[in-house]
Image (cartoon, rainbow, N blue to C red; front, top):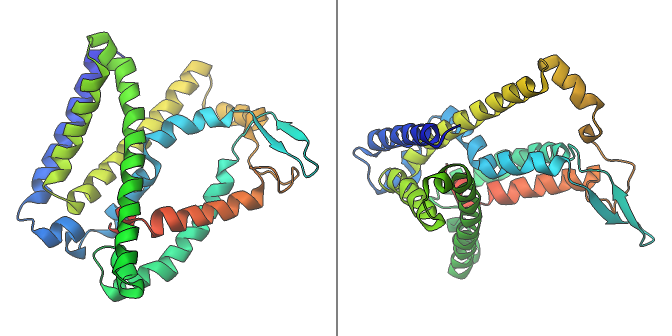
Length: 275
């Protein structure tokens, strides 16, 4: 794909985001900015949270992790080796379902009952202002660090396939990306983000479908043939029971980790729960 085509796609995407931002920010006040007056359509919120929780990092990194070798120590201290990680992350996805059930049945009722605009307000009501400030500070820190890494990854991709051929430095790539993101979120707040996250999810899922299509074309096969190839591949192992508790990919460890990660990274995260 030529740099001109990439620029056209990016320009179209951000133009659409600007239009969304303009429509959603009209007559917006402080309450609209932070809570969207608690009137966002649940379907948009649900779809948007898929894209917000996955992001481009997942889209780029997981395919590489499937074939990555991993080692672990046995109970006796011997170094053991598995050929690849495979689809072991699907075990964690099952754990996510458990975590989301806890969020829906335990955490969300608490937030709605108290009518808080930030989940850290609950810490203030329950444990005092110091807990409120500490929780908020850690949230800001985690958001800054996490967003920086995600931005860095996206900027690397843009630099490799777009900016380098055009002779643009990495500094300007990062700066332009930050400015574009800031412009469409500044005025509309959470109401804008709910809609743009939905758009992001649709685009991401569309990219997944297109990627699968072009992979099939490259392998000269159809969908059923590709499924058969995956089933026969050494990379397709999904469940790890036989390797014991010391294996990082152990089924039970992944289930528990997935549940706890969902509760902490979604249920106790202002960015996700605000939606």
